[in-house]
Amino acid sequence: MTIWDERYSTEDYAYGTQPNDFLAEQFACIPAGGRVLCLADGEGRNGVFLAQQGYEVTSVDLSRVGLEKAARLAEDRGVSLHTVHADLAEFDPGNAQWDGIVSIFCHLPGPVRQKLYPQIPASLTAGGVFLLEAYTPAQLAHGTGGPKDADMLMTAEKLQAELPALHFSLLREVERNIVEGSYHTGIASVVQAIARR
Image (cartoon, rainbow, N blue to C red; front, side, top):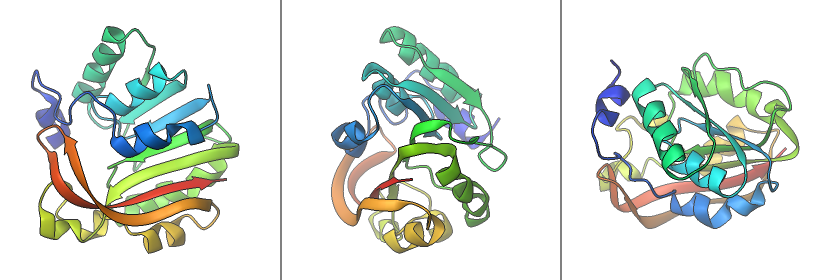
């Protein structure tokens, strides 16, 4: 059992059932009705939200327990959600598959990003959108969520360096109040990005 299986092995949803605020505000930048890949979608709050907006959503996660809860949440809300149990270190996002790729607090070690991120531009359709929110290294001082390893935290500079083939229409580092279940609560330092192929 992974740490994520353990975290999700409760009746409650660890990060709540409402979508991430940044995603809820910005999802319409993804072509309407398109195919969307949600990276590390956990218990499905973001993937289910997107399915409710009419997207065809595939949620990928390392935790079977999380994906089972995501499927239940989708059923409860009357939408369809494809789930894929996979380690992102080995995951192949394919070629020209996605109108949108969503990465919400999907913190990966540098070597995993260096394998996955170069595949992202080609896996997007023409005009496809990559949308991300992640904690920055400044989050370590807040202690309100996220990994304790600076290598797994993101900055605007890192994103531009690791995704040079994408064109960023929004890229900013901000502090904001996050209330997403018991693990993400309080003032946080985040980077937010919207980029197109």
